[in-house]
Every structure is written in structure tokens, then in C-alpha cells.
Image (tube, rainbow, N blue to C red; front, side, top):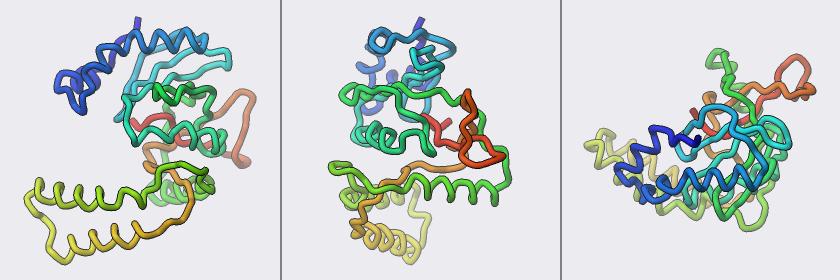
Length: 221
């Protein structure tokens, strides 16, 4: 039985971003991908900020099916995962880009248990591994600079204008300066310590001696 996580039930109740119809059709959508990829449900369905994640037993072994409501921010995820090919990120096993559905290796939920300084070091190392030349056709952050400026103004207004003019002006200047950078480097857009997981495959595959493979997981907690 496919149970919709409470977070998405609430989003549907509020019809956030028009997601109500998508949530209503999700059980049938999920069953379709289970059949398409010859998978069996194996565990409790979960949810993160932007997707529902279904643990499954697949022909490749333990996996998850990650399905997102259609959104431009998720459109390039399959390309990035395919390019990284398991080096620093969860491995892509199959995908349906038009349906915003991914079949991913299952890495569990063992997060980093280290201090802040070590966590920053690990995150920096992982970020460097994930910084690779971007393929043609991917969305660029530079193309969204105007949207960021509008969002900064809207958020500042909604918060009651807590920042001084000098600080807010510096934030706008940073967005404008960095927005002009057309460097064609692909990086992870949500890399933080809570998103980095330990993963010990079977047979073991280590990124370096003495440490479990560290990967960016399929969905932030």
C-alpha cells in the first residue's frame, strides 16, 4: 500500500503550488513506476522538502524511487546524477525525466556525526568532487539573478525590514556581481552537513582508505 506522507497531505490540503491534483494521483503514479522498473515496495514511504521517496527492492538491489511534483528546479537533477555517476552523489539507476521520477541506489540515512570544523572540511572536499563541467542545456544560476533580487526584496519586506540599508545593499550587490559569472561549472545546489550520508556498499567501495563512501543523499531530511 502506498501511503502519502503527511507533509504532502498538508501541502495538498493547502494546494501549495497547485500540488493537490498531483498528490491525489500519486498512488497510481507510484504503482506505475513500481511496475515499470520491476520493483517491490520495501519499507515506509518518506518525504523531504520537494519529493516523495519510496524504498524498494529493485533488480539492482536496494533502491529508492524518488518522485517530485513537476518543477523547473528539479528538471536537471537526472542529468547531474548521471554525470556524477556515483562519485560523491547517490547513483542514478534509471529515470523518467518527463515524470520527474528517479530510481536511485539506496544509501540509508546515516548522517555525518562530526564536529562543525570537520563537517565543513568534508563538505568542502565533497563540493570539489562534485564541481565538474556542466553539460550543454542545463539551467544556469546566472539566468535567475533577477528572480533572486525580487525574492530578496519580498523576503525582506515580509520579515519587517530587519536589515540595515547597508547590509541589504551588500546582499543585492553580491547577487548582481555573482550573477554575471557565466562559468560553466556544475555544482550541488543544496550541499550541507545534513545532506551528506555515509554509505558502505556491498562489496565495499571506499572513496579513500579508512572512511565509508560519503555521498550526497537523494533527499534532504
